[in-house]
Amino acid sequence: MDETGHEKAVGSVRVWEVVVACLFLVAGALVVYDSRRLGSTWGSDGPQAGYFPFYIGVMIIIASVINLVTAIGAKAKDAGDKAFVTREQLRMVLIVMVPYAIYVVLISNPVYSLGIYEASVIFIAAFMRYLGKYTWLKIGVVSVATMVAFFLMFEVWFKVPLPKGPIEALLGFQ
Image (tube, rainbow, N blue to C red; front, side, top):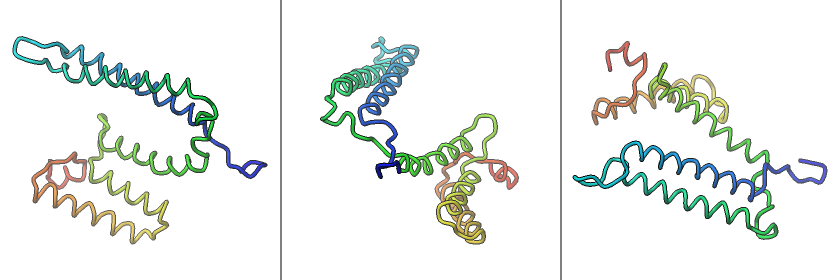
């Protein structure tokens, strides 16, 4: 908290609306660009692979421009300069979001993937230890038992292959 008793805000609503509108504008432009590469017209046998993504990208661009103009043109007293989030609120969001990002990288890293099961054990263990303050014995039992149950359910019973890592390879599962 600052000297007035209020927590510091991380940007205003207006600033974050502009940032999000710009991010979606870039995403829409990437969709349009890549759909043109795939072919975004109607071919002799029907729509090409990029036909529908092209129009979805155009709609994203139009919506983003409308949101950007609205955010820039909003009067300050309407909503523009209200605090979007405090530093403490943002810290709590990042406590959850950063481990999720690391989890995805551990699974889908093209250089070296741990696979979904090993990454999930690490993810569950980290959350239980950091947020729940559980003992290592409980963490080990819950994280490993959960992934063994998921492995049996997906790989053995439902025959749904998920990304595997080195431990599954050692056990003969590919």
